[in-house]
Length: 115
Image 1 (cartoon, rainbow, N blue to C red):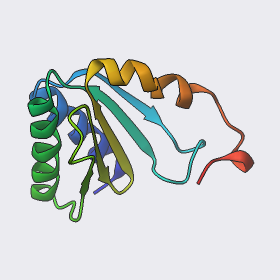
Image 2 (image 1 turned 45 degrees about the vertical axis):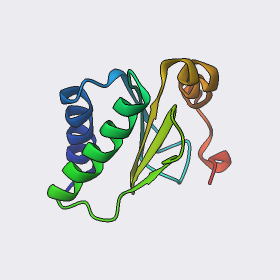
Image 3 (image 1 turned 180 degrees about the vertical axis):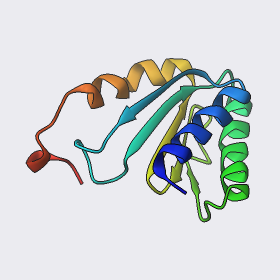
Image 4 (image 1 turned 90 degrees about the vertical axis):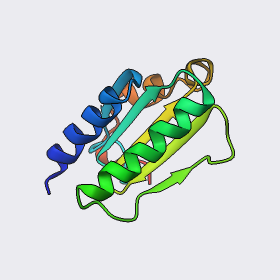
């Protein structure tokens, strides 16, 4: 399965399950940790948990095994590690506080890409 299909599937799963303000950042020339990073908002701690669990379940059905959820104890942030794609799901206030979109928006020369 190609990375573009995985990216599109993740975006659809988030959208179908009412994630808000879905943003996708291309990390290919910025970091070696993943090819893409999604940032999305949920409406409540329960919504964040549901989004992360649904995403892992749906990706498994698509053949993407061993995805992990980080932040299980947190009520305002979850991270789904889908290997070449990382998905941050925030409560809106935490998302604004961390402002990952701004942090990852600048172009970084490949020799300075972060690990």
